[in-house]
Image 1: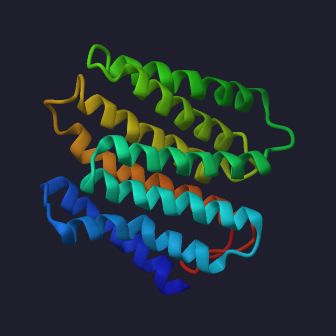
Image 2: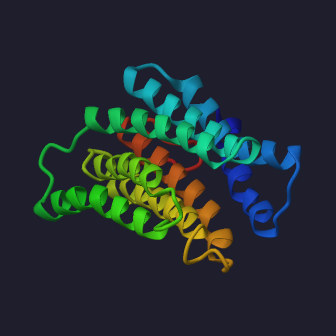
Image 3: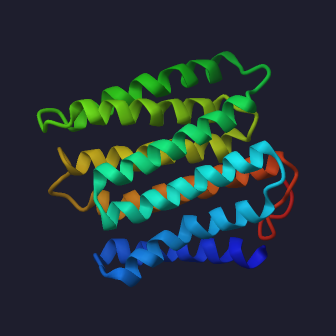
Length: 216
């Protein structure tokens, strides 16, 4: 268990080098998938409840999306991520916060619409506005339900927002930031860091401390 978790963190963090320097090839794709894939294996091995199963499925589809983006392309990879978001939403809805504050509810309500508006604006006049809007709607709901869940906001909630930022940068690559290095530098760190934070927060509430991050 400890090996899977630690290896996943190392694989995911170190893949930044491949993303930044533009390395390609089958071994790079395996490296990319290993980050979230090993976290998925770790979650699957520890699964004992419905919530554990939803977490494992969420990570399996996120890892699949990471690989399919390279092997098949953006459209198919996005479908895998979308399915992963649906499992995440189910998990977060099962674990809603009993009494969120007014500011928490406000941000939760804004995350979905804002994600859609920004995504569509970034791909405006590229012909992919509808697809981007549909995906961004599910992504925004995932982030909103994460923020309003009982899991720690500054781990799971912030992690979900980092995931949103990563995907919006992918949309920006097709639009205003297409000629810059910003997406290349930030997409993967935000994506993997966001996923790792989400999982850390989820497992902390379930009183199963990570071997590396002991305690809550």
